[in-house]
Image (cartoon, rainbow over all chains, first blue to last red; front, side, top):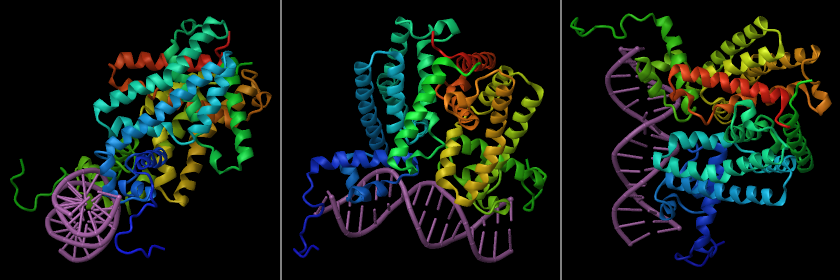
Length: 213
Length: 213
DNA sequence: CCTACCGATCGGTAGG
DNA sequence: CCTACCGATCGGTAGG
């Protein structure tokens, strides 16, 4: 291809500002699927079309990159969840929408992220990221529950010796884990959508009415 | 301590048969907490009081040890779950007991195990271990559900367009994830027990009756 | 953004 | 079960 001599610049004239975003998105995909330890800085760099030391021009070290990836993902999720709360008002609609959203966007393991946060990043970063997680993930669910209680759609958590926050944790955990063992990703696109719809409805149904006869 | 000269045998006369068990238990603790990649064979060996190459006398390689650890854990769990099913017959008693059991014995991340199984071991071992997991983990729950349906204690899963197996997955996932973010391990023993009891009751309550008003 | 290279650590082997 | 050691790979740096 390149026959322009020794000084040919690589990377096809890509805007250097874009490189940062490419790294973030590439690293996000790899970290979420394989975990922090299992992904090497060389893998990330290769998929971005740069050399490994070039990564260190954009990020101080691997951990800094990881934290940036998490922050990017959390901001994105926060925007989307609050969008759902704006667009829908009924509790069951909101729960269905949020469940579906999570299933579509978090095929990979969210618990992977939790594990890495606990073991691979510094306590200071842990706290920062934890706060972002509460703000972007937990609070929208808590809001949904509190609204549901106010509107008389669901029980007051206190009636069953619980709290809004504890219920929010429960919902998040159920959603996150429900699709983990079934490899939805390997299905054709239309069956995939049908499967997600079915699972989301199942969760909402059970969570609202229970399984007792 | 030892002043018997150059040929003193280390390891305090420990039965060499026991070493195998010590390795299994030590590796189980480490693998389940930190994950396959994050635990080195040297860490395991050090905690067992042997050198790293000595590990390879008992296990062909790291992956073989990991599979042995998983098999050991699954056999143990199968025995305990079936014991609960023998001892209790009512659905809500069984669910409470199993939930409590899981919380006590799986503080660590079961999803860690799932992740490692998917990414770190060979397809043949994956299949072996998957079958053991179905037999030891999933089947007892499926049995509990089917009995509950037969006794008229819970809905037939078909009524809500589901199956016993899917419901079993759901229960397992809920149980496994409910205590993940709260660090129960750091509490004093009596509060720990109270917390587990409370969470188990909450799960059973919601799972049976739902949260709808 | 590259080439060249570092020390540390990894899983695993040789030989006793 | 030990000492000694291997090649491979890791995160990160120097210098341009």
